[in-house]
View 1 (cartoon, rainbow, N blue to C red):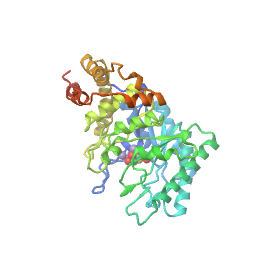
View 2: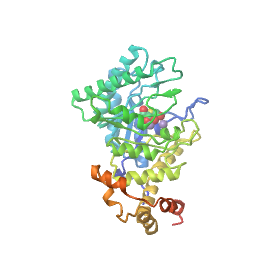
View 3: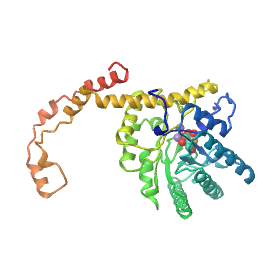
View 4: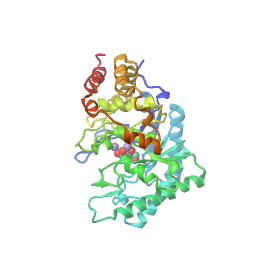
Length: 387
Ligand code: GLT
Ligand code: MN
Ligand code: MN
């Protein structure tokens, strides 16, 4: 079938996504917890390619070494049985009360040391399962009040941690890259490095910037009222799009983690079009969960919906690229008669002098119509299925 997921689409889900039991600040869980092996089987059933995990999604935080080995052994058997891969792993540095003031940025030095130890062990686990991307989402790396933590110290502490862990990965000879995931708030009042742009700026200050990129999440940029495509394009252009978290979110609401493509259809369309046009070949990871109203069948509907919406939008993108009227309009909009060719290009003293002496018909420039209404309407009609 046309919209059926296939391994080449590289669709992945976290154990914590389809495994979400529906607890929220106002209510108890509504679904029974599935074991990691059961989740792997569910993901294989709906057609996913891979499964990602936090250390403690798989191994409970207080497991003994023997328990850990048995759990990892059983999970590897499930991977073998289902054919699922583990492209990405990460650390849970937010659930345990020890991390209530953050992990790498916590004011208590013992918490910072414990966070490093936990992350090294989780990196070992991820690599053992085959992961080549390691995500850092600093959910608790923030404050409710700036009276409580020094922002410049937090930035330095976070840098020290990432530098330490980069060196650890190199020392072990692991084939692993880091992807930093920003979020503006929730669960902290404010989280440091709130946006993709902030993370990109931070990466250039690291000891090994070449092994560190970003993991932009659609909902997180939308929570900040930003344009997700623009963030992703900047990351891509900088060679830093190491991973991506796809979901959906309505501006001004709590952290919703909705099914991909369920709310902001035009944004999702231009995002998918971008990823396909540039040839992004990493995982398409859905970091979302089913509505709290759903049972396990609804969870499968949720997962299938994420992948199906991606593939529908991918097909729409191909249609957009092949649409003669849209492409003619785009060509017209960007047409260049070459009249200013001698002014374009890198700086030279001559070019600058010629450009300063040139004359422009400002009134004509201002009078031009760009036909963007027509172009956008064609886009909307294509998305609404009438062209
Ligand atoms: C958590 C968060 C996500 C992160 C995950 C990785 S866990 O669900 O909301 O955005 O990507 O730590
Ligand atoms: Mn999220
Ligand atoms: Mn995420």
